[in-house]
Length: 388
Image (cartoon, rainbow, N blue to C red; front, side, top):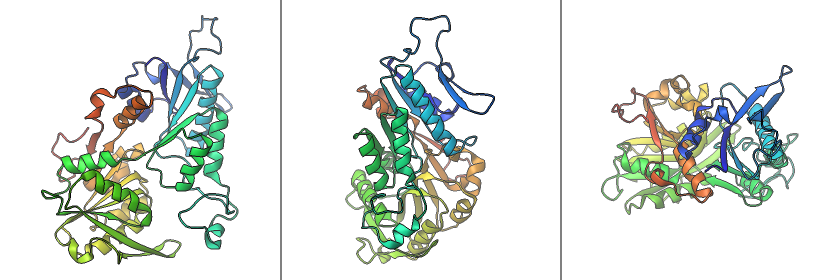
């Protein structure tokens, strides 16, 4: 598709390169855009053109849609990447691009989804004084980020499994509905069905999906539906926060599957993100009391902090399934001791398939080959051919 140009916001970014390649873009990203810095440190992107062509100055991108792929980077902070997004979008529009789409798998500033006043963000239940005070003195950063993207020239945003209803409302409003929150339901379902990660039984009666809190329940219910297994169980947890970083978790009184019914079964706990891992470990400890065969943790955004790696190395979690929305998770050093139970689904093909659909194109072979698997040889299930 000659009228669609895919670029990254960091030179030679493997994630952006793979999205462009699987989309079908033949040109190298480095031949499309130069991401340079002036001597004073200022960033200046430049879409490359023929220096001898004086006929289309400022119009090289006329009629084109530019897709900016923005993933985390070891070499740049999120603040730096955000500024790069603004300037690349502006460069595209100032040189004739008809549309700019930002693909940001883990949408920046989503954790700052509220401000100190009642109109600063939406929550599932009305905000009380305690919730407002939590954000006292802070900016409503996710709202500002959306505003700045729009002002820079971004017309639409694609992200993955965003956790905040407030952020989703803001982006849908500012981008007039051109906001897509891709949910990796089919990815997880396909892998769980076609790998040996779990042993569900013929009708799913040996498998239970678990929602660690109310916020995750709707996603887990959708996963339950996608699996289409009549015997598949659903377990709901009850979480009560007793301090800034203290929570009490147990199987909810109204859970369809009780603690006593977990014995001998495989349990998959789903969540959108993990940072320290302390909450999810407590959840799994509570589930362990039911004597299941295995407990697996499935999470879309894996922030690999030292504390998180230490917590999740605990024996209550048998295996972890995640996506490379934060591409550094593919680094074995980043995985640390968790490499022996870490499985990463690489999603560049899945994103490319969505982009082709977005632009009205057939996804072709990507329909049945829409992700690849990466796991360490230290994982007991590694067979030498699993790594994508």
